[in-house]
Length: 420
Ligand code: RNT
Ligand code: ZN
Image (cartoon, rainbow, N blue to C red; front, side, top):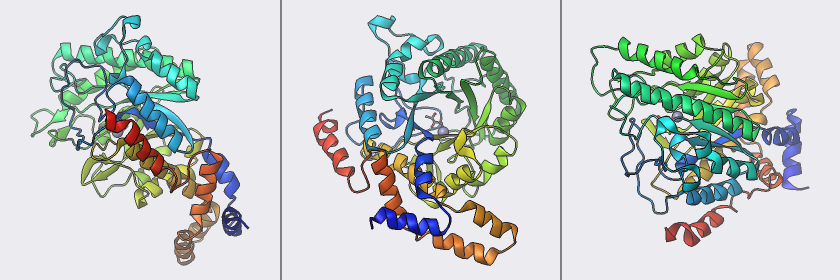
């Protein structure tokens, strides 16, 4: 008997159908963030300014993508190395300006045509696309954006947000899949503020203004992403957890909350917050990342919290569109293709593991107050032959198995990345 058939039989004993799990996972889009490929630089700034907004890439591994063509080629390699259904995730700073579309414009003036090449890229690969306004790494950050006391600054960034709504609508219509549009700013202060309410009131009004731009909520899913602190923004964050959740709750007809698991105090876990939010919100969005001590955006591993997040997504019925899953990390200290691939494959693994869990039986034990057997059953799941199911999944997606893809990534490094 093949390894897969043996594994299938082992899971079947627990009432788990491995074939069904594999088929289900193939239908779940996971958004691949374009910004791992170039250390969150983008293409829209003439001068090579620093990354701002309290986020930080560290490392200077050779081979980062410097042009849209290089970034697209790198993404193609990642798509080939990963199983599962992918969706692109772009930032506004990845706009492509050329002579055909009239050349460079500032962020308040960007249009769908600046993303036409990305639409062509996605169409050719059957991908949907998510989108993000870019409220950082720009001279109009004073350093605040949507919460700035300066009206001219706020106006510029509101116009940027509205332009991004129009672009998101265009992406959704062209690609025939909803576009999640995430609003995150690094607005906040390094030191103790004298006014905590003013910036939040301005932030609220600015988001209101952005969302007053007409859009179809079935196609465009605006999100607000909360944060606890950033580098140089240690004392106060305008878009805190309560602010963002409050905003989403008060605007359920046009906005959903987004949780990034690097954006909470270290003993808080997003896995536990998923069912809490799904109790009240029809839809929520996630940025899956790996914080170490802070929002360091390390590559996602198959660690306990990633597994727990995926278990909650599956158990709470999140795979049928209620939970929008995206990756968000940027490691510049290792091969970027490998960083992307390891994180994407790990989210796929964690989702597959979750789908291979006999949830109904385990819930039954909990409801019967049988914590002894629940512990035994949960622990024994850990040594089931998951690897054989994973290999089968990769094969049925036409993607390489573990042990097969790293050499391909290394050859690409030798042939392409090292020549940049
Ligand atoms: C920053 C947020 C945000 C960014 C991306 C680039 O802390 O997580 O989502 O990482 O928009
Ligand atoms: Zn994020």
